[in-house]
Length: 337
Image (cartoon, rainbow, N blue to C red; front, top):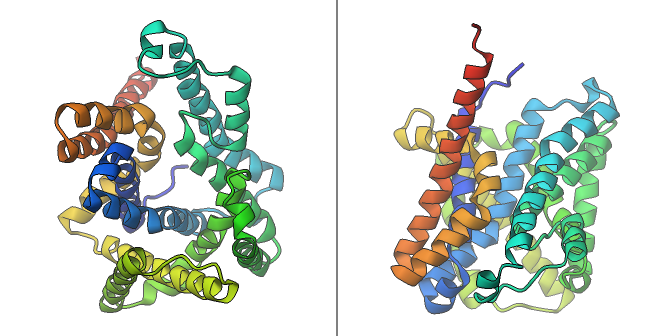
């Protein structure tokens, strides 16, 4: 049975996937040449992944009920939904580039031949060379299984576990930031946002629109001040205080953005909901060719601003067209003779 769509949640996903695509379209050469582009990139990366995982938690709480299905059924369903696309698209992306890497004309562009074993290990760790953006599916699968299993008996276990892991991650931040933990560091950083998203339906949606707009302005103001003026501190007490304030400010931004998405009936809300309905397809298909690939080509031809627009528009339109093509094809196959 198909789940009923929730318009505000789809609209919020639309905001989230646009932020993801925009962040990826601001490629390294653009960030290196423009302070405004770099600043916009840093703002997006300040909160966009907590926002996405927060929405996943809200959707999970709305549609999932692990107590009504066996643990094996629950894990299997999540594996098919998240890990199967991760594995398939990682193999396709990295396998295609692996074959191209041995072509002489490609090697002239600076792409060195890739090792099959090395790429398989990277995919297992969650960071394939040409499928690095898919780490989110890997992390989301682990987080949903952790949260679902622990909350079968008590929600306190899953929420408390997320808070404890987040505290440990910040105490041992040097080890977590070394890069050797791969997708594990993302799980430890984002699990708490998933649990906060699960609480959204009961607590946050009762807030008044004016209050949520104020929270959005407050959060964005703090992010701006933090990026421009607040230095990175190593003292444990100061770092802990800054980390706590950062969580509260990111949460304020998320509450404000979900407040915007809940203004149902407006034309921009319907556009965002339309994009949000296809956010999964957009996320999988936009990298590496549509977003970074086309942005890089356009940057060499037209310059900074046009290249970002090309990457964003292509990343949103092409997956949407492919989605509709697939639906038309399936409808024709199932049409009775």
